[in-house]
Amino acid sequence: MIRTILVIDTATPAVTAAVVVRDGSGSATVAAERITLDARAHAETLTPNVVAAVSDAGLVMSDLDAVVVGCGPGPFTGLRVGMATAAAYGHALDRPVFGVCSLDGIGTQTAGAVLVVTDARRREVYWAQYRDGVRIDGPDVAAAADVPVGDAERVAGSPDHAELFGLPVIGPAYPTATGLVAAVADWDGVPEALIPLYLRRPDAKTLAERGVAR
Image 1: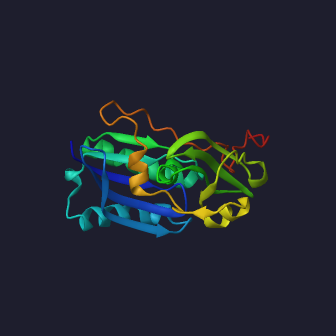
Image 2 (image 1 turned 120 degrees about the vertical axis):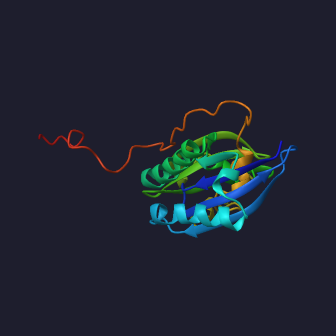
């Protein structure tokens, strides 16, 4: 069965919207894609990127069969924008929405033993280990020095952070549309509820959490 899929990811500075066509054999092709590299403009750029990608593919929104969205790990605000947008499109179009680990959008595109890392801020990285495109450990968050490299032969992901591990750096640097589609385990089942992979609490705290009396 051929599926036309809207792909969204906002777990990294790459604000990604793409249309991917997946054929019956599982092969996926990007029909159109819009990516904006801006860690502070998820809300402003995602919807325009979605509209432009669908238009570039020569389609209208009702032509879409499903939505795939990266659920992190990533920053609180970025993930909230991407996942809320994906859920809204799925609800409006009555289409299934599949949430996947954003690191899989990188790791599923690699061969061999690969460590994938992205920026978690606070001098930390989000990480996961892959073998021939299959995640075998993670996701988790840690300082680079505390990440278990294991038998990884190469590292992919955020270029600035990948360089910290002393391994050959490969691409992709950010989650890819085809990688996110490849991370969907069951296209025929009912998608699970979208759950963001924050891996840690947001920086902002309530008054109660800060011990401030009202």
